[in-house]
Amino acid sequence: MEMEINMQLLGYFALAMLSFYVIYKRFRRSLNLPPGPYAWPVIGHLHLLGSMPHRSLDRLSKAYGPLMSIQLGSVPFIVASSPEMAREILNTNDLTFASRPKIAAGKYTVYNYSNITWSPYGEHWRLARKICLMELFSARRLESFEYIRVEEVARMMASVFKSSAAAQPVHLREETSSVSNNNISRMVLGRRYLDENGGNKMKPHEFMEMLSELFVLNGVFNIGDYIPALSCLDLQGYIRRMKKLSRRFDAFLEEVVEEHDQRRKRVVNFAPTDMVDVLLQQSDDPANNLTREKIKAFTEDMIAAGTETSATLVEWALAELLKNPHNLAKANEEMDRVVGKERWVQEKDIGKMEFVQGIVKETMRLHPVAPLLVPHLSTQHCKIGGYDIPANTRAFVNVWTIGRDERVWEKAEEFRPERFEGSSLDVKGRDYELLPFGSGRRMCPGASLGLKVVQLGLANLLHGFTWRLPANIQSPQDLDMRESFGLTTPKAEPLVAIAEPRLPANLYCFP
Image (cartoon, rainbow, N blue to C red; front, top):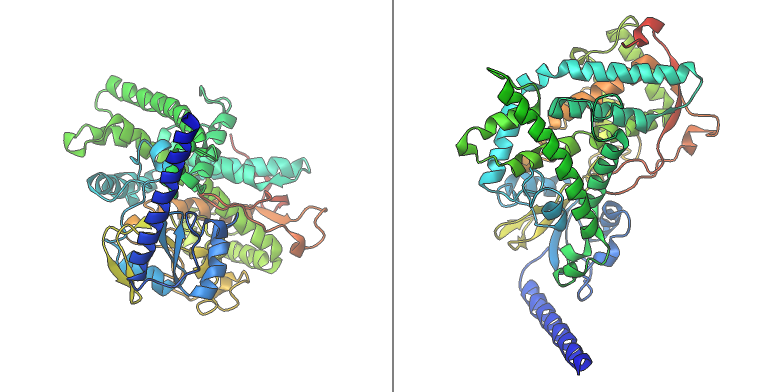
């Protein structure tokens, strides 16, 4: 009897799903939607994404055009794959697409959509954006943290020099991740959380494991986000992992915030020394409505946004330069001319190094850290490129495809930093041919900090050392340039290279 009831319920469910699908398809056919491939019942186009969704969508865009409709499960998407269509979404219709979809990662890993990345457009997000731009990432605040960036880069130089002196290969990801994480943890949390002797309750490897898991889980395609009827089943196990990660992160962040709160209560006329201090100071104003959970969500966002992203870009840049050694030689010549060989590169020098800036831009073009910008959500019906875009449509901007658009970039598949010499094209969201940080209201608020960390770290690695591939790689063209997909897109195979000092030995010492 129970089995018969279950079968009846299953039949009703299947009939309801089929009815919904038929009605939905008829409604969609009444609109002038962008072109796209045929969608299968229930799963839509989920089967077409593969392990590298940005590449799969790139192939589809070549068949269906720069603005394409796809359906992931029951969720409608548009995909912009040209600068013109990116401008339509991020500029012309910026307000319409200023919100974010509610997915499991935003619910379970960042305090129920309380962070900057996944927060829906509204009062809370506007407050977060204001605090970021006016307080956390203001020019004055970033300048006050310059000494931290200088010290952490110096530590990295000393570490690479130590490997070189011992005739050991340098594991670039370890070095770049360490400098990025310590930069951010000192600026945000006030302490080096990757220091074994830093007095931290959490071990460095535990801290890195948490960050790695956060990036993975915020980049996965969780089937329950697209077929809601299956979300309660957690077929892939992602929600279980998200909840476990959330508990670990909350324990860590609660300890950090409590320590900061107690410290500022003990000190008369307390002045903020890091970004958690600033957030707690802002929470004193009732008008800001900055609860404890929101402070932890913002803190988690800043840690995540500023760590793996910077490390990934520096690793990709060095990989491209090792594959194209003539560009490496040209960068060394520029730095020797601008800086000389008696000191390290300083942030004030970067503006005089057009070719080094070009290396960073070209790396962002070919290897954007987020090849599909975090999805946007339309809040009302609009028109894009003459097509109807209904409310509650999600939008991907495929900056990976835009960066390889042959109409925009000559020899688009080649690494050519010189293409930016004499060019006013930048990465600040004004030029839609190059959008590593996005554009419009939802552009990454930490873009200026990210650029500073990447440019200073990369410039000093190039200035301080002569780089070559290890003996097991016979030719630069044999270097593995495959990528892995997540919220960020690092090299699938971590970069290992040989470094030889090119500056006086006393410059590599760090107390």
